[in-house]
Every structure is written in C-alpha cells, then in structure tokens.
Length: 97
Image (cartoon, rainbow, N blue to C red; front, side):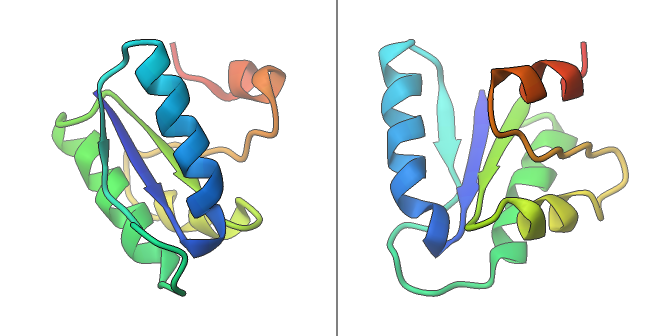
C-alpha cells in the first residue's frame, strides 16, 4: 500500500496521482488534506511517515507547493528518507531498493 499526503497547494496534483494509481490498480490510503483550504503541511508529512515506519504502507508520496517543506518535515523521522523528485529520473536515483 502507498501512503499519500499533501498540503492545500498539492491537493490538485494529488487528485491526479490518485487517478494514476487507480488506473494502475495500486492500493493507496489518502491521509489528506482533503480540500484546498490552508493547512499545516508537517501534520500530513507525519501521518505518511508514521504509516511507512509502522509498516502500514510500503512507500509514501507527499506533495506540497514546492516539495521542499514537506520533504524536510518527513525527513525529521528516523528511518524515513524523503527526496524531492521532479521526474522519473530523480525518483530512480533517490529510491531505495
């Protein structure tokens, strides 16, 4: 399962990510946010990080306006490795085996 989280600035893109995962038949759990109202993005980074650390999710996808803040927030959790990826190349070089 893939844990998903975003802030209000990433909400529109997260809808596209969820549609892509559905088309691929991949299971996911959306930890929010669930609309475009302003939110505190570290809360969503924590929810996704905890899901991965607990084994509830195998991987996580986090989206915020710039990608920097939510990556920093997720990396505060020991055992989490979150990298800003703009395309498939960056995802491949940062991915864990």
